Length: 277
Image 1: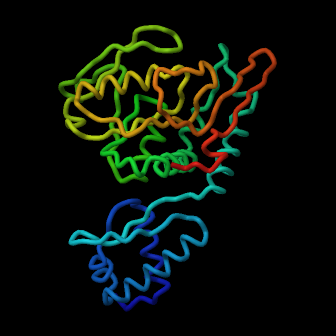
Image 2: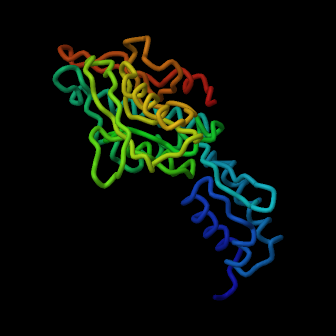
Image 3: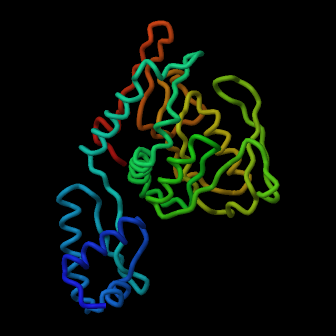
């Protein structure tokens, strides 16, 4: 391969780092890949770091030590987060999304890769200092944002199931109370999925009373897993008291008026106030 110019190296480096957030790449890796000295790679990293910071596209963090190197950390920035969440609120406020019973249709948005990716990056940014070992959600609609959160944090995603599957092997199953319907439901998790002493970040698409999140917390306690945090895309304003106390929602659903054909959603206070941690 012919010697690459600096602009070509930075282009390739950008692609590699942004495709695998929070993964450490050694300077030796890039030095051997491009056939240049590590000092040259260091200069390339400084230029790329400056460009990312200038446009609020994230940051490159230098990790020292024997296993050190450089990693890309998604950091959307306050303005980008606020603009994205406000736009999402407007999309979800369409009266055509109101379903019988006062529910809100949002599956199409959850399964749009660009939306799921940005929600995941915001979740990862909010909880990055909690250092989770894995992200967990319950099937099905929470999977896209959980997957993108795990990607941004560079950690695996675990799925709790409503019904156990033979392909999961041995499972632990619990009963939990749905806060909205007050019905007893079940939730299962494969014994091989997690290990005692790990830290879990719970991510879901929607929270009303918090019953599902509480169910995941109870299920993980059976494995001796600590909770790093709970994040949801949308939480309802009522009931004000949830079954989980500490959680972070991106959007607050204030009203769904089925008769008046009106939906009211607002960005969560911590987003408006810029309290990203």
